[in-house]
Length: 354
Image (cartoon, rainbow, N blue to C red; front, side, top):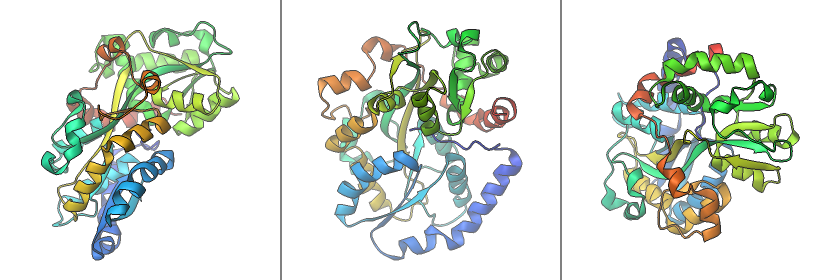
């Protein structure tokens, strides 16, 4: 899954337009009518296979069976975040639960959009891996950016992110605009040795564009199709996505980068203006159900944030990272990402996505 982000330029003008349109929607959209019927929970989520799995493993068996009607408000993250920001001025918002990645969750918390959660009302939170816990966020799934390659065509894969800056990968490397922020942190990690050196890594990304001419795809699914058809032979994406594509029959293998994979956590929060907090707590607790987490992990290949999810040893060894790999995961500096992500997207679209 990933963290789906718009491939459009998120300039200040665009941001203002989004905020304005979101505010207009509030008077006629989901917020007013969806909650007219008791027992409705409105969920802001990504679409595609991510939403399909959410419906299959959480919403249908664990939420709707408790008498709640789930109304789905699907879209890209920038638009969904802008809608929440616009709703801060209202007495009651339109969203009960919003799915986000960890960095965007931090941003929304700093913007005073997400509520601190009462863990006593989320009994399953006690199973969450301690390192992933946050007051305002229910962590759900996690993975990391690895090197995914066609094992039939590449016998000596790169062992590090940095080794991709090589002419032999010209025309063979695939990237997705959805992970622009990860690629920018990656180049900064190579150049500056840490996760807060994006500025020093920009020239390196420009050099990659000139040297390797990576093929850019709008979404994970398109990149996966390109790997399957041989349009590209190597990619940078989440380990979970690589395992999904392997499971679908693509001749791929995964290499953990020497620098340590850039980590990503997905989860959800409850907006402060949520119209139905009771329904939101039911939903958030259902997300962490042990059985659901195990089934979701088997289907998505993301590692579950619930440490008590009942995974077979084989599945856990496939989807999770080894102790040594976990030790070297690179977690974002959330304050740094929150401060800079809009400008990064604008730079990426102007410089790399053309």
